[in-house]
Image 1 (cartoon, helix red, strand yellow):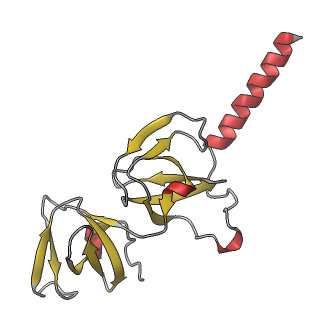
Image 2 (tube, rainbow, N blue to C red; image 1 turned 45 degrees about the horizontal axis):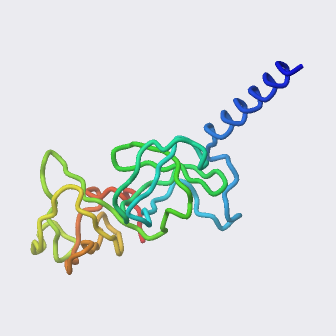
Length: 174
């Protein structure tokens, strides 16, 4: 009898783990019908954020982010947990309380080239700064393939091509 009970518990635990790790977009959104549609971009609230292999504090930590305000893409919801992906394509689960709806983006290099921040949303507008890859910016507005951004921690505001930012979708307007 004890062996049968042990096998039943093990089977139940395996089934529960399978269901939790295979949660997908079909999982009921937290917040009801007003919840944001998936996927969407958010940012990390804290300097230290644990990323787990599954949606729960009982799952092992895969890695730890060490920088607040970093943009992440939210792919799935499972209760109070969010499956996220970062710029490198790495993913994992974080508690929803560790995410902020505040938008952030990072500059993406293309062919090793830096990004020129312009005074106006045009390729021939006056250059204001040269942004290196992975510089953290806060997008204020995006339209017509350009985003108005501020550089976090600096008094610098200007326009960059939308395609050179990770943290906003192509053709996204806001």
